Image (tube, rainbow, N blue to C red; front, side, top):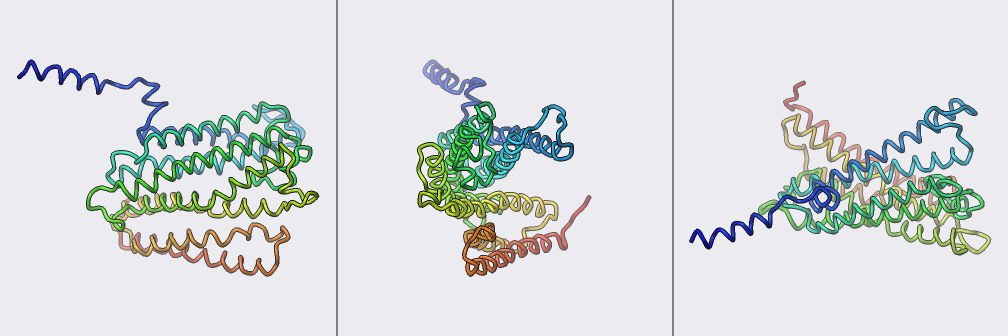
Length: 360
């Protein structure tokens, strides 16, 4: 018996040999490693974005002088630095850290799953995200420099290379943003499917930790809102490179159309990055209060209502853009309404702290 068992044992030992460094850390499908990939990439981009902020604020404080560690800042470079700083901090720092990194790490561990439902899609999502960072940073090394048309990329400034003086940089910016969105769409598929289908036996929907709910709802908001902006990015790319006129009034286009497409995504995006942070805060408060979250179902229903309302407020970013004043009244009302559920969540956190066993 021992003679027959030993080859099987040896075969099992060979099958579980240690992975190489490259496969384990750069080609990983393990959700924890992918979390660290997103986290460290986000931190790296945060340092770059922070350096850009330092440079253009120093230029503002001491115009016409060399900025230490950078040099003299031209007008075009100033525009590029501000645009890149805004873009990086929203899309390449807040989202990869708060949504992708924490989502990848926490969701499987907190619901009792071995890993994400689609590990290879999870790996692909990071690889596309990393490619988007390379495309964005490469815009600093092309003729004309990085895109200088502001992080909101309003046409006609962004649509006509002669206006922003960065024809190649603007196209690379649009491509990088589109790739980043594709990466997070793939990640969102994993987050939602894993939380819904891979929970530990006996864990019902109302047993899911609140931070997991917040990350899943944030992913749903992103996936539901990003489609129009990806379409807008394709149209903007075509305006820049093949002469279409989607946003050119001289050819029947409408520059305000971009604003609607951008802010229809841009306002739910506020909650995409806010909700994971609130969920983390909720978990920390409950742990150190040594109490359950006050009104768990109320918080969950509130955050769902917040997500729905977030699709009805986008035009408050456009009150001076020439929209119909009658619509401005409607968007003012919805903007006031969305403050109600967020305030309710804050009171729930205070109620959780009240009577808690809190020690310094």
